[in-house]
Amino acid sequence: MSRILIIEDDTDINNMMAEALEKAGYECTQAFSGTEGLLHARGESFDLAVLDLMLPGMNGEELLPKLKETQSVPVIVVSAKDGIDSKVELLTSGAEDYMTKPFDIQELIARVGVQIRRFSAGGEGKSEALAYRELKLDTESFTASVRGEKLELTRQEFKILELLLSYPNKVFSKQDIYDYAWDDIYIGEDKTINVHISNIRKKLKAVTDEEYIETVWGIGFRLAKKL
Image (cartoon, rainbow, N blue to C red):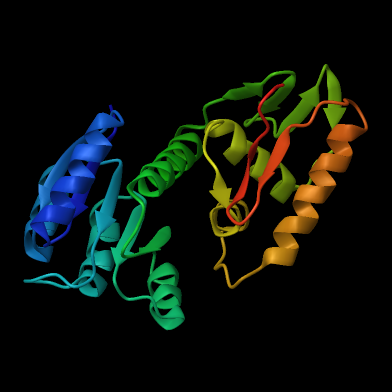
């Protein structure tokens, strides 16, 4: 079971995150100040940290590099600060993801899963196969196929499918997809996402008549349900 360190001084938000993440199958340790969070990080082992910025004792900006020095785990910042400068600074300082309050708890759970899975695969080099209907991905060999027919995908196309197949019932926004597939900062790259989704669909269409990616208008994309 993956262990998550939640560092958030608002008791209601901290408890909400802990309850939701535990229901999703994670084990959570709660800290309510930057100092308390650092003590837990230095004394226990975690797979991911959720970090608020406006903390008593030691703020999130100060705590982030200390967390990274202590444990090599992904950090998701959850903050009321919504300026692009704050996001850029935190992401370039070592945070893997940034969510702005108020946030959707199910989106947080999805992002936690993405980061833990990414770090686990990268750190241990495990071979993992993902499949949905007749579409198969091998995350170690970086190959994809449908009905045994190989798909020639770019890195970003593969990562988009990897994200969708990891959570077949989840609708991902364009920002979610960009954050995962590009490891970069999203600044409204709608056209980039649309072009890559279109290219994936064309490559799938060349080997199967079935639709695998569904557009959810106004929200994003998910795997298409079989009729």
